[in-house]
Image (tube, helix red, strand yellow):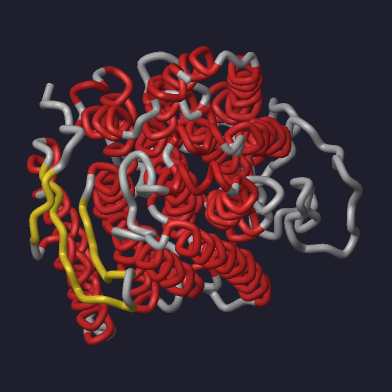
Length: 558
């Protein structure tokens, strides 16, 4: 086990936080220049992914020893510097984003070629730019720099959401833009309020200096600033009721869905909430102005309601989308409870959810490319044809439900103890209910794939009636989780499953291309490693150091 991060970090000037953002800029040009040579183009994409991860990983030993790498670019206006800083919290997000980008880039080669997707050069370029923007969010030293990269992330991911340029894709893209830019506007308002209150917007572990005193003098202004910042970031984190963009964005290619749900986009929102609680206000100040409780209620409601919506989905990616909305609110719930164990659980859920959810999306993409399977009702017996893929899917699903020895259990166990520290019965009730609902909407998929046949399978989804009425002409996912885009008797393509059942793969590990199989097996392995030996993974040490320096102990003592 490595040493814990020291509470009092030493800052050194370094080129590395800036260099990691130069890599995608160079790669962007090389990918476009290689548009007529797919092998070269995809080699640039992979090289960029490996380079970004290598630069991020090279800073880990120093951060664990208490040294923060900082790149100073200049000054925007007096009091607001353009600085990138690789601190422990930023490293958690950066390691997840850059590490999983390597696997996503490899997987994308198999998916885009296997499915003969159009606009592949633009896809690989924007994928690289999106992860670069996410790393900018991770390494931002103040709210202004974070907001700039937050908006760049929005703009870079729009072409990915609207990738095939169909009417549905364009509408979903505009919807995503409207939600994300509105969230950014709220963050901008929160930033102005903080600057007006404290005269400083630089992230400081435990809260910006002097903000607690000013918040005590004028608590309503502090509450408004917190609501704007946390509310703005909550849009990308998919917290209800500002979640509707996320299911609609499922129209994007599956690697993009993985990027949106596991690697970069939604995590940027959850990461923003963590920055707001830990490095802008500090847990003690959030407790003093009373904003933890309403945030916890919103997160708890989102976890339960979105899990109910997931029960209704027959479309596999849509069910995973509502699962994402629920799981991200575990991170928000951990931040809202404010106690040391809750913060630890919330931050541990960033990598735990990323590993498991990316596994699920990579499996969904492999099923689609190899067999054209999009709906759960098409999956009876599919594990016979794709045993490795469905085994990985089962592992990811059980992790989402919080089963012991898997990644999801580690973070949820800490959240449970965090709820006990906070002295509330809300958290155990939410966790137990959510765990049961996770089993309810994931187990039918596993059972269908492994134990049912084309002639003998139950109806899907689990719930078939709308919660909030049905719009007969609507083609979009509604806010209540309903949609009207397909008839259960006609999915618009060949009839699945085949009437004589699925064939077995032609050889060992031959069920799909290695470009897709290796990444999904790798993320499944990460789910197992994180669940079996979490304290031997670097995330645990980074997060312990963050929580120790956050001042969260004062919430309990107070």
